[in-house]
Amino acid sequence: MRTLLKFAAICLLATTTLASAAEAKDIRVAFVPQIQGIPYYVAMENGAKAAAEKFGVTYVQQGPTATNAADQLRIFESFVNQGFDVVVVSPVDVETLKPAIARATEKGVHVLTSDADAAGSKRAFYVAQAMDKDLGYKILDEMVARVGKEVKIAIISDAPTIASLNNWIAAIQERAKSTYPDLKIVSIDHTDGTAARAFQFATDSMTRNPDLKGIIGIASTTCPGIGQAVEAAGRVGSIVTTGFCSPNTVKDYVMSGAMTYSVLWNPSDLGYLTVWAGKEVAEGKKLDTEPKVDGLDAKVKWLPDQNILLLGDPMVFTKDNIGQFNF
Image (cartoon, rainbow, N blue to C red):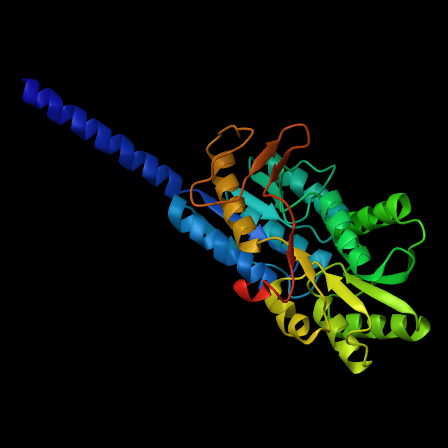
């Protein structure tokens, strides 16, 4: 009898374990980036797939071929209609997505944002790579350390509807006003998501301002164009350029001096954290103040007052360390 009871207990435990595993494997997470195929989002996808394999989650990533709000909306709604448990989005245009996020939430779909937020929407929470203010402050502080406090700089961003990029610009402006009042931002231009457009704006800025000392790119899509413009203008070494750029996007320009440094984070880790967060929310789990994410070295923080799951602090990539990273 005792042997039979022990055998039954083992069978029950095995059944429960298998059921739990099956339940985890049934979780489907989709991510809609701002644009498909650029190195930054490829790195996010690689990290996300690693997490999906580790935690037994099905993961799909698909974004628009350009930073187009209407195309992103269609992809987002397609994932919702396919019955994904969790749909994560990095919004191109928050206002375009807000009604769709509300409808998805009403259907019982868990909606998260990652990489960029949709403030004021019905999303559950934001998986943030770093705080907007920290990013803006960091990139300007690094610029000033290289060019001084009484100079002219230009800013080139991607689409004007992308809230996260606008937040970084606002943080740069705030830092300049409060800490570097003699620094002048001569222009803030917005591209269509192409390096060619960034090249044009960077060239125009240098032409209009021969004494321009710095250019900041507010998206990985802008960085190659800025580097190319500096090389074409023969300004390598005489102007400091930077951006929120993935190392592989700007490695050649950093090594040549056409791009001085880059500020970012590890997008692979962000993708990994995003999938882990999707699994946690799908299973109805509450987040700890300092969650322990199996397989991730970053010091993750949960900020309940802001509904933000924070990956960590910004990183600075220069000639000295950029070769150590592959994304």
